[in-house]
Amino acid sequence: MTEPVRVLLVDDQHLFRAGVRVVLDSRPDLEVVGEAGDGFAAVEAVEKLEPDVVLMDIRMPDMDGAEATRQILSESRVARRARPVRVVVLTTFTLDDRAAAAIRWGASGFLLKTATPAQLQDAVRTVHAGNAVLGPDDLLALLDTHVRARPPEPAALQRLTERERAVFDAVARGLSNAEIAEELFASESTVKTHVGSVLRKLSLRDRVQIVVFAFEHGLRRQP
Image (cartoon, rainbow, N blue to C red):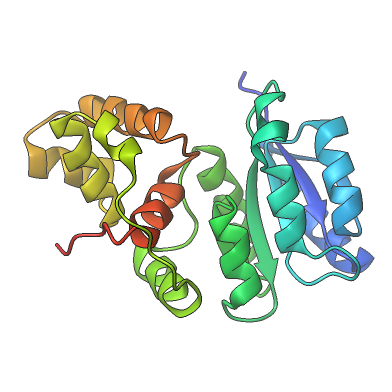
């Protein structure tokens, strides 16, 4: 039997955490392994509990969710972990500069606290699988509003083969593996292999980071 997805809840409201715990623990494939009431506690809890997914409130006193995300997903911390961790930003508000910062620092998506139980459960499963819970158009709108600097094309792109670059461009446009396979006349398994190679060569964590990387360097090509 597959192990359940291990989830850490981070929010400064105890009642909200209690409600989310009930929603997640009601599913056999999901397990809440811990809670934290602020960003400092969240950083410590990730190192101690090794969750698969962190549901991170973006607005908290002392250390907010964006800064906690930055620390949790810093290269030095990621390198010494035995298993990857994904972060989903939770907020009562619409996308703003702190949510944008969290996504740029590696968060795999964004979810309103008004989401339904099913949406919350699906979000955890989605990011654990390495995908985003923020649509490409919403992500690009967020970045367009809050990201200004676009440095020249990075040298790292030269490491990609011609086929990998085509896959990179397609992912940056928000295409799924199935859509990329159809566009490039390849199998989905081949596309999946190419996506993994692109992530490895560019030192990126997931598809969300490919979109962010492409946008910040002015590399997103129109469909």
